[in-house]
Amino acid sequence: MLAANARKLRVAVKPGVLRRLSYDGRRTVRDLASEEGELRVFIVAGEVSGDIIASRFMKSLINLSPFPVRFAGIGGGMMMQQGLNSLFPMEDISVMGIWELLPYLNRFRNKLRETVDSALVFQPHVVLTVDSKGFSFRFLKRLRAQCSKSSIPRHFHYVAPSFWAWKGGEARLKGLMDFVDHIFCILPYEEQVCRVNGLTATFVGHPTLEDAFDLGANKNVEWKVQGDGEAFRKKHGITSESTLVSVLFGSRLQEVTRMLPIFASTLEHLNQSFSELMAVIHVAPNQDVEKYINSAVSKFPVPVVFVPGSSIRIKYDSFNASRIALCASGTVAVELQLARLPCVVAYKAHFLTEAFIRYKAKVQHISLPNILLNEPVIPEALFGDCTPAKLAPLLMELMQEESLRMKQIRAADRFLPLLDPLGRPSCSRELAHRCTPSMIAASTVLNSSL
Image 1 (cartoon, rainbow, N blue to C red):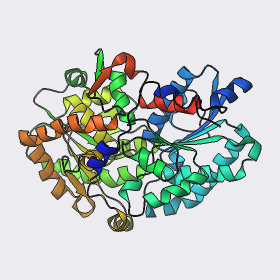
Image 2: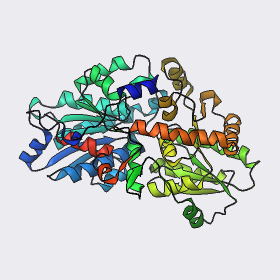
Image 3: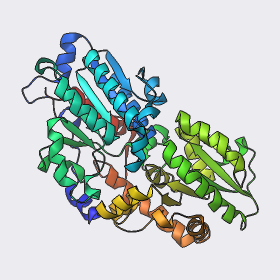
């Protein structure tokens, strides 16, 4: 059903999309920045994927803006490279789940208050929040309520909430109109549904596609990233006989502490069938996650190689060197499709959170390729099935059965174009740099009417 909606509702980016909000006869953000000699943007990201999205947006906005851009807000290392001095560590608001939030409620409220106060002092022209809707929407709502009518900034939110995944989700969209002025959608059917419910929205494309723009070396950008697996093996002294498994626990401390013991035990099961099994452990650029993995990995049942999450190129080199990936549910499933690396997706949460998901969810799958294609292309082990006894046979089968591997690899050619506003299997590099998701979003902000 969702796949059909994706085909039916895809909104193409027509020529001139980067300026489509410029000429409606009203003053724009660009005009306001021109009057004040600078563009002030308050930007908030609460997790690693948001840090990457926001940093690319910041870079595109700096390139497009004819005026100096000044940033304030919350973010991680990638955003800091673009000039952000984060109000506090991004990890302080990186909380996943429903019941998992309870122990952190007091800290969450304090950080929310601190963020609103900081934004009021900064007096931004534009406020952009990226994903992390639990924090983002509370922040935008409070900020809108406290701003004076003479200085209300434009509110943008990047990554639409997954209304399509939940019973009654679409009905809740109308409530965002009071404090969100524009939503940047990353899936093809989201824009039209948002607009039907009164929200201004733009389908900018999935942010992970920018990995292909950044790393592709050919004249035409294809939705495929071919890393250098041989160089990765050589750098780490790994022989050709070794079987590598890329292991991705997630980017939040809560999910890493939950998934690491399960994944470690799973590899212990596999190690009985492979004489030279090695784990390529991907470490998210999150201070708390890095500390935990460094302390816990000494008990890992197989030799390990670490890959820093801050390096996109090394990540794809390691994917190319790997036979398979075992990953927690999230953006990484899209990255693995770009890399054409078969994977198994796992997810486990607090038992009350799992019960809530079972009751409220209306999608059968959890990984985006399965959802958009409406078929179980990628094996999933969820909730009670997320055990070493269940995961090990799924991995073993995928490592040995070429037909199953090719099923995932071929699915990427159908799945990835759905994430592009033009539905292209590839595009010229010249056009690519003008129509990346971050470039479309940055231009939309600049030309947005006040």
